[in-house]
Amino acid sequence: MRTQWLARRIATVAGVVVALGMGVPAVAAIGMGAPAVAADPTPTTSSSPTRGPCDAAAVTGSVIDQTATSITFALRVSLMCGFQDATVSVYTSADDAQHWRNPRGSATAHTLAETEALTVAQLDPDTAYWYRFRGGGSPWQLDAMGPTYTLPDAGCTATLSTEQWPGGFVTNVTVKAGTKPLNGWAVTLTLPSGASIINVWSATNSSTSGNVTFRNLGYNRTIAAGRSTEFGFLGNGNAPTGTPTCSAS
Image (cartoon, rainbow, N blue to C red; front, top):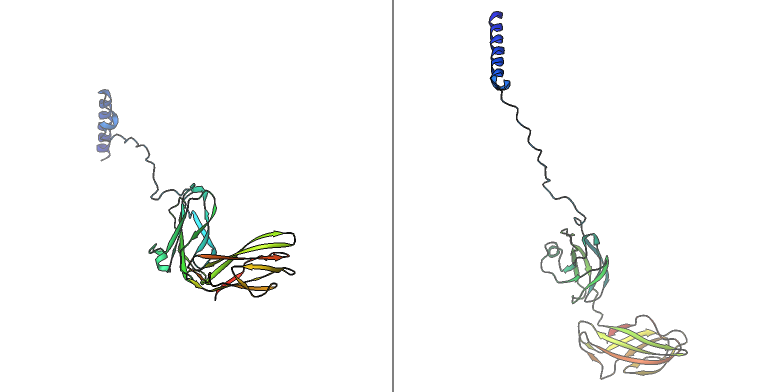
């Protein structure tokens, strides 16, 4: 058997020699395929986009003020996403807010700064609201937040406008009705120590010093919802400051 094996080896070698002499590649002559040429490597791509600077919640915020008919928010916008509009929307239920459904009101900031106050108005007094932020150049959307509450309708508000001079002052008071008409009103404020009232117009006053309550006259008794009237007084000493109380009477 060893003799047969040697014979086969000699025949194989002889075949290679003959093939080489004929210009045929040796690998082909011995029945072996030519080695495959390696292909250029193909770059792999991720199945999800690479996170960029705007792939985050660009808009956040919080409630900073409430009235009977409005809620004011402080929006914080990431300027990494550029100067993009940001919106806050309010809803009367958490479910509506979570599904962006039936917004009760909204406001948009065409923001050029990182922080901006934004007010949603024409809301109902003494009502719970949920809110959501979006925009700012990012697809991310924060979950609904809340509830936050508008204030009860006090019936009216009063604001002061005063001119002071050495030894005296004049004060004008604006009385504004809330969401319902007024049929009579009263405004109470406190004069500083030593101050006194000399003259009053468009109202009556309960005293001339200390705690003073002013009430309407006949012609300015009724104020339509959202409208206002004015009265004023002249005094000695220092003018009153702060916010007076107003109520329907």
